[in-house]
Length: 179
Image 1 (cartoon, rainbow, N blue to C red):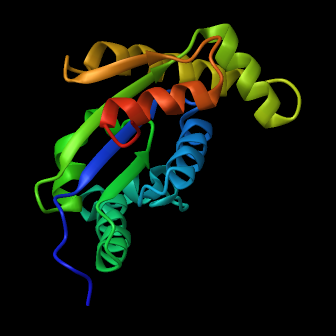
Image 2: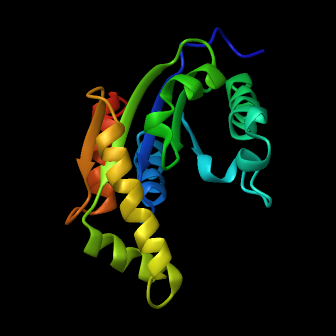
């Protein structure tokens, strides 16, 4: 049996498509692992990735939150108490995500930001050529929505001109998980 669990600590990493959420989370994972800091990384975008989209067809089901609760419960059973969670709008859904995690987690929310031209280049690399115009428009609209909707408790971090490991180190320091 795992010893008494500590209160969960959650880092929510949000931001527009192409801003670097997954890349920064992977870099933070490497830093935390090198420092032997127990943690779990969950890519929130995959928790309800299906067609037809469950959140549109059955919004009351809250499939992503239910799946987060299940995955996190398994990690908790193994003794984990630190979670890095990436999802574009996670910074807007902190209360619901905290409820899904349970145990009154300590939540740190970070909104990653980047300029349109930087994101366009990143999306083009991801697409293996040029970025689909619809993806760029959607990403820009999401950026505007997030930047105007998040509260002051959300830390805004610009990613332009910074290496993912630099941003990851900043997030590790912000949470207190890296010294």
